[in-house]
Length: 112
Image (tube, rainbow, N blue to C red; front, top):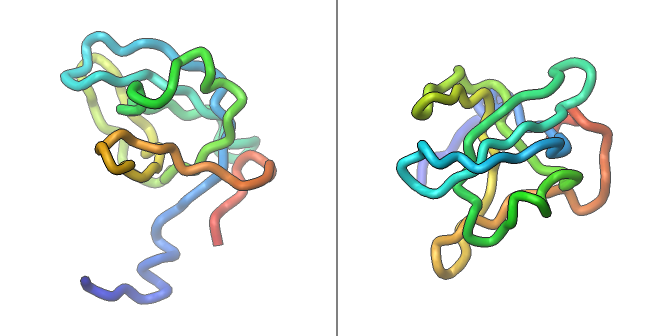
């Protein structure tokens, strides 16, 4: 595994945000949701496509605070523009477990 410097780590902007809306994304090649997250006053609401349908029902996601990488360039996914990366870990079956905060923090808080 390659090591990185502190400066390298500082370039990845990981922020806490709260999911405010989810929709099915039937046009995606793999099962996914369209997800809108409030990252606070500085960043506002950003959207992404997330392959988290195995472990999460879309109606259970609003209100969940997640951790996202907010400084990726926008990416076209089908007919949808993804503006951030919702982070998570694969479980033993490969399903994504969303990375969350252990306790609520202000939306837009940066991981340090």
